[in-house]
Length: 253
Image 1: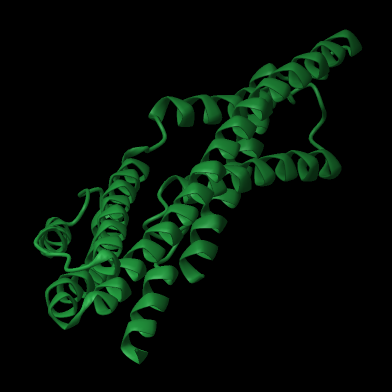
Image 2: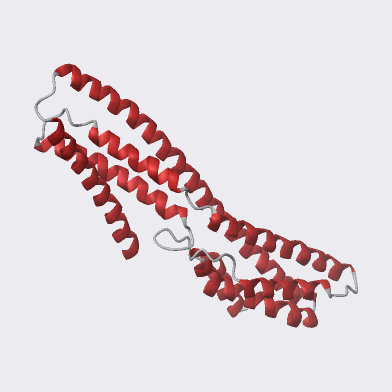
């Protein structure tokens, strides 16, 4: 929470300060009080640029939110699949429980303790976690079904362990989908251009407050986009709640 507050304050105050500064600099260099037609033209320019700028921010913000929610859903799906494999191995029999549950448990602990940070640092999926997944997969493949019940359990475990692999690949794709620098250029260019277009309006307390509010709100939206763009590290880290709850469930079982 502290990281989020500090990062958010930096975005909000920085963007607001930039907006007011651009307005004051443009006002200084243009000098004098513009005529009414100039103010009307400035208002028209501000409206059009603000509309395009707001549309860009809204589209990117919406896309980041969709990806963020999708990752939360996929994490829950993976945790459920891990639980199915772990507890189905117990139902299969003592030999399967020993061979399958150990790598599954190790995999789960590596995802929580290592992989999330690995992804947050841009290093991709944690290799040893793949190793534990592979060990569990080989253990399931090696099972010899003695009856229909075991055959059904083995088929279900294979299906779920493949699902775990799919969600891992999707998780890596989420980590690699960083926002292009061109977006940040367009976003900041829009802030600067809108601030410059305010120059026909006199330097008064009320005008400065309104311009500051515009910059602050834009900074807030930019902060949310930045936070959601990397869901594996602060300030917008999504957390490993589903996996941790499963670890606790396994410890109690």
